[in-house]
Picture (cartoon, rainbow, N blue to C red):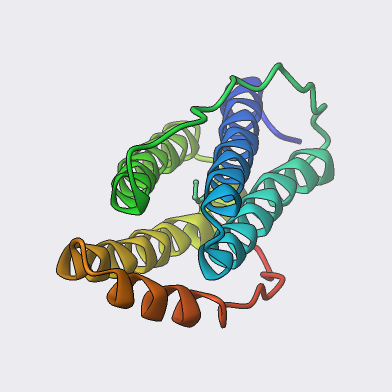
Length: 169
Ligand code: OFO
């Protein structure tokens, strides 16, 4: 059975993962209006990944005998200055999420919850990948600068990203 402190920490993180999903959906809408369909696709994969992250924790809390209580999801930002600014915001957000996953691991360690530690190891590794993926696109956008052809070439590349349902835990 999950302890109360651990359960509360997981519920808080489920809310943050759902917020991530919502934020990336808002970014997907931004790119749709710019008619950058590759970026729309990239964000769509990101949205699905965040949903999977939230549901992984949702299922885990229930599996451990806990009770999932959902809270309101914060309103996401709706506007950015450019694709570059979007990716700067994503990286900043992912770094924040990494810090929250680390805090969750701290609670698991403090409460000596070995099952939660094993489960959370997946999320620790996933955050390394998340930051690297976003950082890669951000670096390309920085190189591209104001070059429209470069932006369209990147858009084509981002159109090839596909979602793979992760096996969490
Ligand atoms: Fe769930 O990793 Fe991004 O936020």
